[in-house]
Amino acid sequence: MIEVAELTGYLAAALVFTTFYMKTMVPLRILGLCSNVAFITYGFLEDLHPVLILHSILLPLNAVRLHQMLRLTRDVREAAFGDLNMGWLKSYGSVQHARDGEVLFSKGDVADSMFVVVSGRYRLENGTEITAPHVIGEFALLAPDRRRTQAIRCVAAGTLLRVSYGDFEQLFFQNPKFGFYFLHLVTRRLFENVEQLEAERTRHRPATNSPGR
Image (cartoon, rainbow, N blue to C red; front, side, top):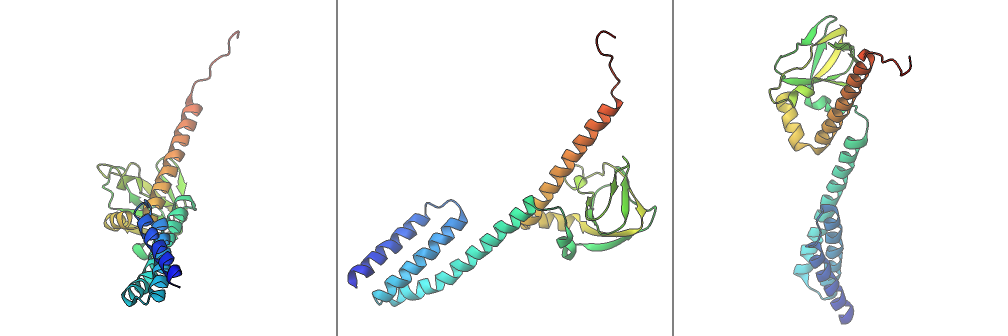
């Protein structure tokens, strides 16, 4: 029994030592849980009550932290690679109703919020129509002067979820899921704009005669 207890103690110490080489939190928490189990076993075999009590408390704490990290990792993965449905933002925004023909904002206006389309149809200056569950006005929140780059008009009455700049700023810095989600959204929108510009250039490019004609 003494030999087993000593081996368990050495194993626990080695696991604790190894945690100092961990660069990411999930492996560190897993090793922490293993060391807690080893120390609990060691404390029980050697009748070391302080060690037994300490690691009996640390074990559930490490388990909770590991669960939180795994959940955060899952949320970030969903935010980065999932769809762009932002319905989960309902608890952070306020409902705004839009009438047919109403201008939500004009080009050059200072951006104080972005909108998630819940229902209705909305048209940008370039003719692009936006419907649920897409986002409106997110670009300007990242611009240095926070000015709107296009006007947008409601063409079929509907409902929007308005997220103020203050709430957007807090969510971006405090909620990794929202931060990754927003970066994914803006990146996709940038690529869409580039593709649209390329299509416009191709459409207006003068036709060239082939050699020999």
